[in-house]
Structure formats: structure tokens, C-alpha cells
Length: 273
Length: 280
Image 1 (cartoon, each protein chain N blue to C red):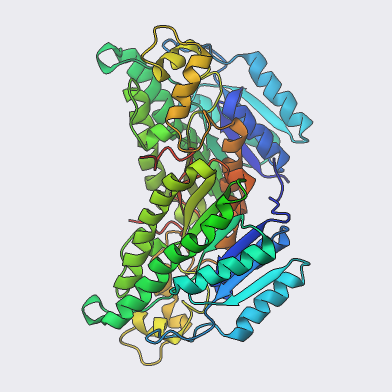
Image 2 (image 1 turned 180 degrees about the vertical axis):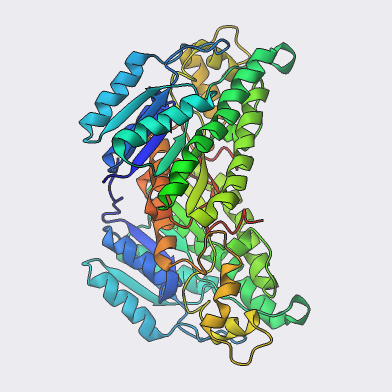
């Protein structure tokens, strides 16, 4: 029986890339996504059609897949995703908690809803996702690997993103605590911290403005220098596949003694002086 | 992406390559297509309380690499000696033309309570584990820069580079210092597309760890303690229920960082520590 990976935010972007990569590496996939717009982000939400495309790509890679429309803010939804996935695919080995949003504003303009949506999805949603999966992982008794997708904003601070930066920093604590709790079950917990990744989350006018606050309505071309300015290596961003490479490493037995750590795929942002 | 990374026709420099972790790194790179420059002292450093590598060990590494159809240039060189390493670098340039990856792995461990550690012991550890790494990058980085195709430097640090443990003050100080060296170098070498990272293992099953000297440090009250007497002590550092990891576990991390999959990873500390760093 193939090992099974559950991935949240799998309809598009990084989540889709992780699903396809892990499918190529021999995993069957449980792909979870809200497939709907949220209230405060200034970019479009994923759709059911996006999740269907992920399903096609995973099947084309030769793996089985269960898709679930669900909200990481609902423990019931996440428990249903685990139940449906295990019912069809027989087991669960890896959780990639990838679902996340950006909703930016200077602190004094940030609304309570902006704060709550981001923290509820990016931090509490990760906690709910992991909590829903744990009974199955523990009962199975064959260990496992949990990968939390954080951000360079989980290691350094950035303007106009207090909600996002706080939530992503929180993931480091969540992983460190969980690594201690789960070691006795052979379940590893690690964080991947990407720099900019060119997905819908940053390829939008609001993000361009975040990276070029000096311009009124910057274009992508004008934002490129801003994207590049945070990186040490000469690139505006890293690809979803670069993040998937790190996820695949941490999901595999190649990292069997790595737990509790944060692996930056950040083009050197963290150490940049 | 997917599948094993390849290092076809790349050249990797590995210090401390005669045995233990270094030999595995050398052989694993060769399995994936790389030629190897294997550097080792092959001699005893006074004050080190366990037998160090021999010329026969280094010859074994060479034999294993060559049996895979790859070239292996071996040098009996002390990483504490910059002039000697520069001489090796000149030879490597002639033989191989360039270097793609540097694995600064050579290291020693000297144990003693901090207040009893002698100047000679402190100097031996610092000179090997810290200055030896600086010497290594100073000698070989030019051979990575010159071809203009980027590359990677991986410093083999330790869980003791992230946390303090007893009776190894020189080792811990030197390994902590490697993090600063790594972060600074990452900044300096980024313009050349050369990435710099460290790997921080917990106990690794090599002769540096598995020797009577270590067993005695862990069991001061026993006469002639064995590895069995020390399993609990070794395990107490780790979060996952193991006393140590294998050299291949460290190689897995080293290979990943040096591979195309790590192309945007620089300045990172990658612990292969069975959770030792986050253990509470």
C-alpha cells in the first residue's frame, strides 16, 4: 500500500505543487482546499475547478487522490478530510499544512477581521489540521512526518504584515512543542520557510504595493526589484517546485532523524545583512 | 524534479575523508557521479583521547570511490596548516580544474571539564574544528568562484553548535563559531551563486564517538564502561528514541543541500539531531 500525504491548500499554488511532487515520489494524496474566497485578502480565492485540476495532475503522475472541500478553521471539516482520505486510501503518513493567506495593512489600518482571518487560518488552522490527523497517525503506529509551511516572515519581520508575521512565527513554536510531544510515536515535525513564491498570493496588485510602497500602483515589472530586494541570491522569488523539493525531503526517510527544525528555502533572506 | 540528485562530473572536496562521516560523504557523492578530493590528516593529534585515522583508512576511501568509476585525489594534509591546504588547492586545480562543492567535515573531539581543559587541548580543537574550516574555505572557495558556475559549501557542525553540553567546552565553542562563519560567508559568496550552509548532527556512530574515552566521560563512576553502559547517556541528548544517527543520515542532508533541490537554500542550519535542539 502506498504511503498517504494529506495537503491543505492543495487547489493551486504551492499546495498543488506539493501534491504533484509527492505523487511522483509514490504517495497517494488527500487534497484539501476551501475552494472559496475569504473576506479580507485582496486577491481571488481558489475554486473547485482549481482543485479538480490538482486532481487530474496527481492522477497523471500515477497516484490515487481524494479531494476534500473543507475549511482549516473547522475541526469537523479537517476530521472529515482525514476520515474520507483514510477510508479510500487506507492510511495516513504525512501531513503538509500548507493552507495560508495574506491580508496586508499597516497596523493602524488593519481591521480585526484581517487579524482574525489570517491568524485563524495560518496558525490555528495548522493546529486544527495536525490535531485532526494525529489520532490516525498514532493509532497506525508507523511514525510519520508533519511539515508546516511557514515563511521567511516566520523568521524575520516585514512591514504591513503584523498578522501574517505573528502567525508564521507562531508556527515555529507549534512545531517545537509538537516535536517534543510526538517523538515517542516516531512522528517528526518540521517547518519549511520560503521566501517569495510566485503564486496568486503574491502575484497581485496588493502584493506589488507591499513590495514597492514608494509607488502608487506598481506593476509586476516595477515590483520585481522589490521582490528581489529581500533575497541574498539574485532572484525575485523561488518556484513552488523548490519548496516541494524541501517538503519531499522532509516527508521522506532521507530525513528520518530531522525533527523540530525550520528549513529555510529563502534565497538567504534570513542571514542577509 | 524527483528521484536521486546527480552530481555528474562535479568535483567535491571532503576534509576528514579517511573514515567516519567524511568517507560516507565522499562515497555517496561518487555514487551520484562526482569526482572526489579526499583530504585527511591520517595521524594522531596529541591530546586527542581516541585513535585517529590512518593512511590505510584514506586508501580505503580512495578504493571505494574508484570502485564506483570516479576519480579520487587523496591528500594527507592537516587542515590546521593553511599553506599546506593552498598547496593542495593548486594541485586540485591542475588535476580537476575546478571545485563544485566543499564539505568541511574534518573535526576532533577532546573531552574534559572546562576548568581542567589545557591550553594545548583548547588550541587543538579550535585550530582543527574552527580555523581548519576557515582554512579549508579560504583555500578552495577560489576554485568554486573561478569557473563562474556557482556551487555550495557545507560546514559539518554539530548539535553542540546549537546547544551546550558538558565536558567539551572547546568543541562546543568551535562548533557554535561555525554558525557565525557560515552566516557571514553566505553573505559574501551569494554574488557568486555559492551557497553556504551547515549540517548539525547529534551523536554519529563513528570512531570519534564510539570509543572508551567517551564511554568513560558518560560513566565517570564505572570502571572500563562499555558502549552498552553508555546507550542511555547517548540517548538522553535526543528526542527521537535513538542513541545516535548513522553517517548516511548526515550524508542524506549534505547531498540534499549540495544538490539542485537546495539551489535557493543558503545561510541555513540543518540539524540531523533526532530533535536534540528542541528537546526540553
